[in-house]
Amino acid sequence: MTAAQPGAESVDLPRPPLDLARRSALFLDLDGTLAPIMPRPDDVGPDPRRARLIARLRETFEDRVAVVSGRALPDLDHILGGGVRAIAAVHGLVRRNADGVIVDRPPHAGLEDARRILGELAHCERGLLFEDKTLSVALHYRNAPNCAEAVIEAAERLARATGLVLQLGDMVAELRTPGADKGAAVSAFLRERPFAGATPVFIGDDLTDEDGFAAAARLGGFGVLVGQPRPTGAAYRLADPAAVLRWLEGLTAPQAVLG
Image 1 (cartoon, one colour):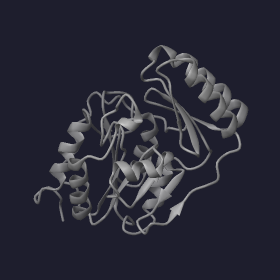
Image 2: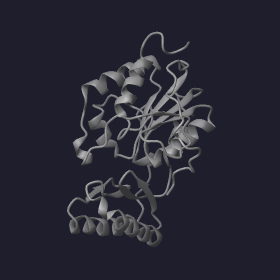
Image 3: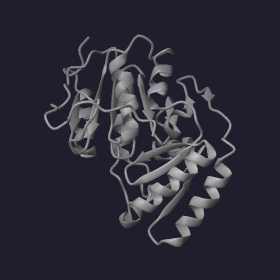
């Protein structure tokens, strides 16, 4: 697993402030953060409220808004309605900067075996869902929680045999091409316009987001954990995606963002 080692328990973490500096940059996860976790990834689609909010955030923060997600880039463009140019997809393995330039890497050779074996497992148990992101493959067990141990064990064996990176998330085991993580994506964005020199704020819910929290803290900003309290490197917490949307909407109020 590549997530950064989490820090203190989040039970006492406060809500994030609304008075962010105007030179802040927002790095937003999607599933479990901007959108609720659904039974199937395909159940998440475009949302008018989210689209309007992102447009207002881009205006407020002068385009320093990026989405950093485990999903594939075409999937993110569909869900976000093309409203975000700066996107890090597949946990940072694919990154499109604010100028539209895409940086990625070739798929790992071990994905062929992982694709075949996880695909076969998905057909063996109703409720398991196989997802192919080209640079990674994932097996979701949110609809078959009794299969968690077997799925993780199979993924661990495949990681050892192939050299793929095992990424454990919210009811999912993912095997991905080695390379950048969400924290590396945040660092890369902050070396480019319009993010350069900004204070990073990373909002996410999953263990994979801990890399983003760590990068934000290291670069002078902070992380916001979404969901139930757990050990984390984030400095603040919001209860759920609905609370995230309310907080983000508050940031677009004229009096919220400091000059």
